[in-house]
Length: 358
Image 1 (spheres, one colour):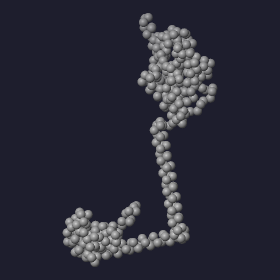
Image 2 (cartoon, rainbow, N blue to C red):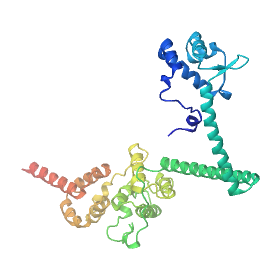
Image 3 (cartoon, rainbow, N blue to C red):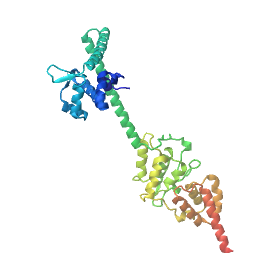
């Protein structure tokens, strides 16, 4: 589609112009170069006031990158142009007539448009007021659209900078009967605070902090297995622990962050860099009997239906079980089937004992 500039710079050009007597003589002497110079001069006239050019062949030659003698010959030798009475300007009669016809058509269209406005709005004063009001309305609408667009782009940019690659919604808090409770008499599948990060130097106050942290993590979408792993980080429930800041950022994200997508990777990154440390199991816990063994197995995610069998297999092999549990904790979740892993290590230990006694 032609632009406004292309339409306003237009002038008619007959498809058989090259066959006119004057232009044939021009082409015979100067070939295609002369023909091209002629139409370039017409293009210059189209841009000049009253379609008239000053008679300055050197200036025109510089503009067209041609020799001044060729310009002089095209203008003077073939009757293509006419000079003003003072001889300082020249123009093309045929070109001027064509442009006058075009200009008259444009003038008539403008008059018709003006009459249409007068018929709709009345006198010229009303027209001016209507145009002014329309201009203001368009300006206001454009300004409002521009402001809204900038505000939207700013929000989208901020959202992209702050959001994870896959937005998630924070899961709602679950029913009380399905919450993780760290109390000894909690619901099925619970994790006790004693088996999930409570060190000997910590007392009842820290156990309550562990309980609160576990419930908070679970209600924010952390699985029971991951809750156990989080609570095995040393001093994780202390007031100055970085997990509280991560949780606050999660709550303030409005659903852009998730516990599993952002908080857990951040915690494991802190563990990896040494800013946080996973707990080592205490040797006296294994030696206190089956009750503590069950607590230790529960603390690393062993399901209840495997508990009795593993407790039986671990009887007399508490030191082996202790080392296996340490290995599982150091894996930071890379060992998926905890029960199978423990069972295989206990069987291997039993096989080694039989070989030694054989």
